[in-house]
Amino acid sequence: MKRGEVVGTRQFGKKLNNQRKKYSELYNEFVQQLEIKVRDEQTLTSYHYHSKYFTEFLGEDIYCDEITLTTLENYIVYIKEVKKITNGITINSYLSNISPIIKFGMKKRLYPRRIFNSISKRTRSYKRNLYTRRIKFLYIKVNL
Image (cartoon, rainbow, N blue to C red; front, top):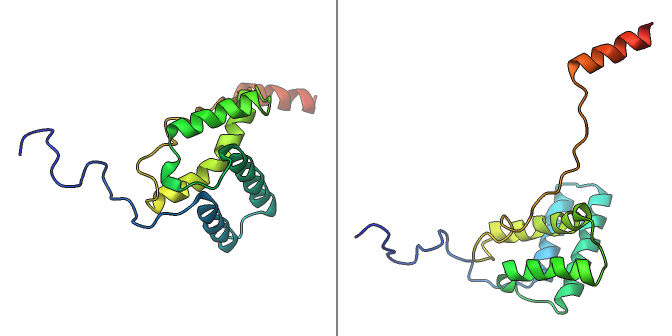
């Protein structure tokens, strides 16, 4: 065997699961697992609404292996143009609320490859940290 030659079916690492599931079935399994882990009701509600927005974008319930990087890029365009949301942090919150569902599908091997790591870019809002000198200054000022 030569370097770089692919032998057998080991091209993308692990094989896909033979069972095809639709996105709604995956979402129901995901919520069931979260309920077993006893997650907060507000977290479940957030996942519910963002998953609903994603299925509105898809238009129909599609199979998990049909969701690709292009689908997620088109979803971002949909959020910007149809929903009229231009704030990067809000767009990332939409993506970060559907990413656990997609990552759950990746663990179950329903997706051909990691599609979400290349799309989610965090726009961070940096807050000024209080350094020890600043904390000491505030402490001294309060005690005077």
